[in-house]
Image (cartoon, rainbow, N blue to C red; front, top):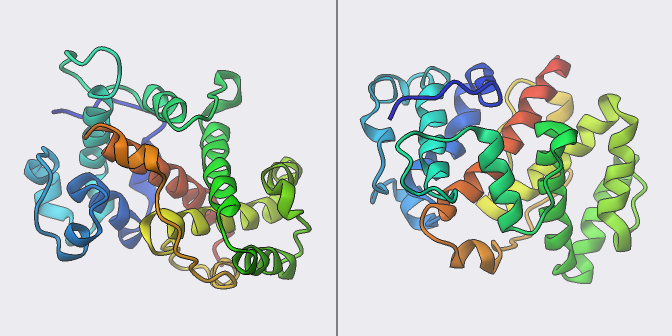
Length: 247
Protein backbone atom coordinates (compact mmCIF):
# COMPACT_ATOMS: atom_id res chain seq x y z
CA UNK A 1 0.00 0.00 0.00
CA UNK A 2 1.30 3.42 -0.95
CA UNK A 3 1.68 6.28 1.49
CA UNK A 4 -1.17 8.79 1.32
CA UNK A 5 0.23 12.30 1.70
CA UNK A 6 -0.54 13.48 5.21
CA UNK A 7 0.85 16.71 6.67
CA UNK A 8 0.33 15.40 10.20
CA UNK A 9 2.77 12.52 9.72
CA UNK A 10 5.53 14.21 7.75
CA UNK A 11 7.41 15.24 10.89
CA UNK A 12 8.50 11.58 11.25
CA UNK A 13 11.21 12.16 8.64
CA UNK A 14 12.93 14.68 10.95
CA UNK A 15 13.33 12.34 13.93
CA UNK A 16 16.47 10.40 14.77
CA UNK A 17 17.17 6.75 14.08
CA UNK A 18 16.74 5.50 17.65
CA UNK A 19 13.63 7.62 18.27
CA UNK A 20 11.67 5.67 15.65
CA UNK A 21 12.50 2.21 17.01
CA UNK A 22 9.40 1.83 19.20
CA UNK A 23 7.01 2.87 16.41
CA UNK A 24 8.64 0.32 14.12
CA UNK A 25 8.29 -2.39 16.76
CA UNK A 26 4.61 -1.61 17.29
CA UNK A 27 3.83 -1.75 13.58
CA UNK A 28 5.75 -5.01 13.12
CA UNK A 29 5.07 -6.91 16.33
CA UNK A 30 2.12 -5.23 18.01
CA UNK A 31 2.00 -5.17 21.79
CA UNK A 32 3.26 -8.70 22.44
CA UNK A 33 6.29 -7.87 24.59
CA UNK A 34 8.05 -11.18 24.01
CA UNK A 35 7.71 -10.94 20.23
CA UNK A 36 8.94 -7.35 20.29
CA UNK A 37 12.02 -8.32 22.31
CA UNK A 38 12.86 -11.42 20.28
CA UNK A 39 11.77 -9.77 17.01
CA UNK A 40 10.13 -12.96 15.70
CA UNK A 41 6.45 -13.49 14.76
CA UNK A 42 5.93 -10.45 12.54
CA UNK A 43 2.26 -9.52 12.32
CA UNK A 44 0.75 -9.84 8.83
CA UNK A 45 2.13 -6.59 7.52
CA UNK A 46 3.17 -4.79 4.36
CA UNK A 47 5.85 -2.85 6.22
CA UNK A 48 8.40 -5.66 6.10
CA UNK A 49 8.04 -5.76 2.30
CA UNK A 50 8.31 -2.01 1.72
CA UNK A 51 11.47 -1.42 -0.36
CA UNK A 52 12.65 1.66 1.55
CA UNK A 53 12.10 -0.17 4.82
CA UNK A 54 14.12 -3.21 3.74
CA UNK A 55 16.97 -0.97 2.59
CA UNK A 56 17.16 1.50 5.48
CA UNK A 57 15.54 0.30 8.73
CA UNK A 58 18.80 -1.01 10.20
CA UNK A 59 20.80 1.98 8.98
CA UNK A 60 18.70 5.14 9.19
CA UNK A 61 15.02 4.80 10.11
CA UNK A 62 13.99 8.35 9.11
CA UNK A 63 14.41 7.22 5.50
CA UNK A 64 11.61 4.72 6.20
CA UNK A 65 9.14 7.32 7.44
CA UNK A 66 6.75 6.93 4.49
CA UNK A 67 6.67 3.17 5.11
CA UNK A 68 5.78 3.71 8.78
CA UNK A 69 3.12 6.29 7.87
CA UNK A 70 1.65 4.07 5.15
CA UNK A 71 1.42 1.11 7.52
CA UNK A 72 -0.36 3.20 10.18
CA UNK A 73 -2.78 4.52 7.55
CA UNK A 74 -3.42 0.93 6.44
CA UNK A 75 -4.25 -0.26 9.96
CA UNK A 76 -6.30 2.88 10.53
CA UNK A 77 -8.39 2.03 7.48
CA UNK A 78 -9.26 -1.28 9.13
CA UNK A 79 -10.60 0.41 12.27
CA UNK A 80 -12.80 3.02 10.60
CA UNK A 81 -16.44 2.28 9.73
CA UNK A 82 -15.79 1.56 6.05
CA UNK A 83 -13.76 -1.64 6.36
CA UNK A 84 -13.87 -2.18 2.58
CA UNK A 85 -11.85 0.88 1.62
CA UNK A 86 -8.69 0.02 -0.29
CA UNK A 87 -6.60 3.01 0.68
CA UNK A 88 -5.26 4.13 4.00
CA UNK A 89 -6.87 6.94 5.97
CA UNK A 90 -5.44 10.23 7.14
CA UNK A 91 -3.96 10.51 10.61
CA UNK A 92 -6.58 12.97 11.88
CA UNK A 93 -9.30 10.40 11.24
CA UNK A 94 -7.27 7.67 12.94
CA UNK A 95 -6.55 9.87 15.96
CA UNK A 96 -10.23 10.78 16.33
CA UNK A 97 -11.23 7.11 16.14
CA UNK A 98 -8.61 6.03 18.68
CA UNK A 99 -9.52 8.80 21.13
CA UNK A 100 -13.16 7.77 20.92
CA UNK A 101 -12.21 4.14 21.51
CA UNK A 102 -10.37 4.95 24.74
CA UNK A 103 -12.96 7.48 25.93
CA UNK A 104 -11.31 10.84 25.22
CA UNK A 105 -13.28 13.50 23.32
CA UNK A 106 -11.67 14.72 20.09
CA UNK A 107 -11.99 18.50 19.53
CA UNK A 108 -11.54 19.46 15.88
CA UNK A 109 -10.93 23.13 16.72
CA UNK A 110 -7.98 22.28 19.00
CA UNK A 111 -5.78 20.83 16.27
CA UNK A 112 -3.88 17.55 16.10
CA UNK A 113 -1.15 18.37 18.60
CA UNK A 114 -3.51 19.51 21.35
CA UNK A 115 -5.73 16.45 20.87
CA UNK A 116 -2.69 14.18 21.13
CA UNK A 117 -1.68 15.89 24.35
CA UNK A 118 -5.18 15.37 25.75
CA UNK A 119 -4.90 11.66 24.93
CA UNK A 120 -1.52 11.33 26.66
CA UNK A 121 -2.65 13.29 29.72
CA UNK A 122 -5.76 11.12 30.00
CA UNK A 123 -3.61 7.97 29.94
CA UNK A 124 -1.25 9.51 32.49
CA UNK A 125 -4.20 10.45 34.71
CA UNK A 126 -5.84 7.01 34.53
CA UNK A 127 -2.55 5.28 35.23
CA UNK A 128 -1.81 7.60 38.13
CA UNK A 129 -5.21 6.69 39.58
CA UNK A 130 -4.33 3.01 39.98
CA UNK A 131 -0.88 3.51 41.47
CA UNK A 132 -0.02 2.81 45.05
CA UNK A 133 0.31 5.82 47.41
CA UNK A 134 4.08 5.31 47.35
CA UNK A 135 4.21 5.38 43.55
CA UNK A 136 2.01 8.47 43.42
CA UNK A 137 4.25 10.23 45.90
CA UNK A 138 7.28 9.31 43.82
CA UNK A 139 5.85 11.00 40.72
CA UNK A 140 4.62 14.07 42.58
CA UNK A 141 7.99 14.45 44.27
CA UNK A 142 9.78 14.21 40.92
CA UNK A 143 7.44 16.81 39.44
CA UNK A 144 8.03 19.03 42.45
CA UNK A 145 11.79 18.72 42.06
CA UNK A 146 11.39 20.23 38.59
CA UNK A 147 9.31 23.15 39.89
CA UNK A 148 5.86 21.77 39.04
CA UNK A 149 3.25 22.18 41.77
CA UNK A 150 0.50 19.67 40.90
CA UNK A 151 -2.13 18.25 43.24
CA UNK A 152 -2.31 14.46 42.98
CA UNK A 153 -6.12 14.53 43.21
CA UNK A 154 -6.32 16.78 40.14
CA UNK A 155 -3.19 15.90 38.25
CA UNK A 156 -4.62 16.16 34.73
CA UNK A 157 -6.11 19.60 35.40
CA UNK A 158 -2.81 20.73 36.89
CA UNK A 159 -0.89 19.56 33.84
CA UNK A 160 -3.30 21.29 31.46
CA UNK A 161 -3.02 24.54 33.41
CA UNK A 162 0.79 24.51 33.16
CA UNK A 163 0.71 23.68 29.45
CA UNK A 164 -1.39 26.78 28.75
CA UNK A 165 1.54 28.91 29.94
CA UNK A 166 3.70 27.61 27.09
CA UNK A 167 7.47 27.95 26.64
CA UNK A 168 10.29 25.70 27.79
CA UNK A 169 8.57 24.75 31.05
CA UNK A 170 5.64 23.32 29.11
CA UNK A 171 7.98 21.19 27.02
CA UNK A 172 9.65 19.90 30.16
CA UNK A 173 6.28 18.83 31.54
CA UNK A 174 5.16 17.32 28.22
CA UNK A 175 8.36 15.29 28.10
CA UNK A 176 7.79 14.02 31.63
CA UNK A 177 4.23 12.99 30.69
CA UNK A 178 5.40 11.40 27.42
CA UNK A 179 8.23 9.56 29.17
CA UNK A 180 5.95 8.21 31.88
CA UNK A 181 3.22 7.15 29.43
CA UNK A 182 5.90 5.32 27.44
CA UNK A 183 6.93 3.48 30.61
CA UNK A 184 3.30 2.74 31.49
CA UNK A 185 2.55 1.18 28.12
CA UNK A 186 5.77 0.06 26.47
CA UNK A 187 7.87 -0.74 29.52
CA UNK A 188 10.63 1.79 28.83
CA UNK A 189 11.09 5.52 28.67
CA UNK A 190 11.39 7.58 25.51
CA UNK A 191 14.54 7.83 23.42
CA UNK A 192 15.58 11.48 23.33
CA UNK A 193 18.94 11.82 21.65
CA UNK A 194 21.32 14.73 21.92
CA UNK A 195 19.80 16.83 24.68
CA UNK A 196 21.46 16.64 28.08
CA UNK A 197 19.21 19.11 29.91
CA UNK A 198 15.92 17.50 28.90
CA UNK A 199 17.30 14.00 29.42
CA UNK A 200 18.17 14.89 33.02
CA UNK A 201 14.53 15.86 33.55
CA UNK A 202 13.36 12.50 32.22
CA UNK A 203 15.73 10.53 34.44
CA UNK A 204 14.14 12.08 37.53
CA UNK A 205 11.24 9.60 37.35
CA UNK A 206 11.80 5.86 37.50
CA UNK A 207 9.63 3.10 36.00
CA UNK A 208 6.50 2.12 37.89
CA UNK A 209 5.32 -0.88 35.89
CA UNK A 210 1.70 -0.09 34.94
CA UNK A 211 0.11 -2.43 32.36
CA UNK A 212 -2.07 -1.31 29.45
CA UNK A 213 -5.80 -1.11 30.16
CA UNK A 214 -8.37 -3.78 29.32
CA UNK A 215 -9.91 -1.82 26.44
CA UNK A 216 -6.64 -2.12 24.52
CA UNK A 217 -6.41 -5.86 25.13
CA UNK A 218 -10.03 -6.56 24.22
CA UNK A 219 -10.07 -4.50 21.02
CA UNK A 220 -9.85 -6.03 17.55
CA UNK A 221 -6.53 -6.83 15.91
CA UNK A 222 -6.29 -3.51 14.03
CA UNK A 223 -6.97 -1.52 17.20
CA UNK A 224 -4.18 -3.39 18.97
CA UNK A 225 -1.90 -1.75 16.43
CA UNK A 226 -3.53 1.65 15.94
CA UNK A 227 -4.05 2.53 19.60
CA UNK A 228 -0.42 2.08 20.72
CA UNK A 229 0.84 3.42 17.38
CA UNK A 230 -1.15 6.65 17.78
CA UNK A 231 0.09 6.98 21.36
CA UNK A 232 3.64 6.57 20.08
CA UNK A 233 3.13 9.13 17.29
CA UNK A 234 1.86 11.58 19.93
CA UNK A 235 4.98 10.93 22.01
CA UNK A 236 7.21 11.33 18.95
CA UNK A 237 5.65 14.71 18.11
CA UNK A 238 6.55 15.94 21.60
CA UNK A 239 10.11 14.69 21.08
CA UNK A 240 10.27 16.40 17.68
CA UNK A 241 9.09 19.72 19.13
CA UNK A 242 11.49 19.38 22.07
CA UNK A 243 14.45 19.28 19.70
CA UNK A 244 14.14 23.03 19.26
CA UNK A 245 15.80 23.17 22.70
CA UNK A 246 18.67 20.86 21.76
CA UNK A 247 21.96 22.06 23.10
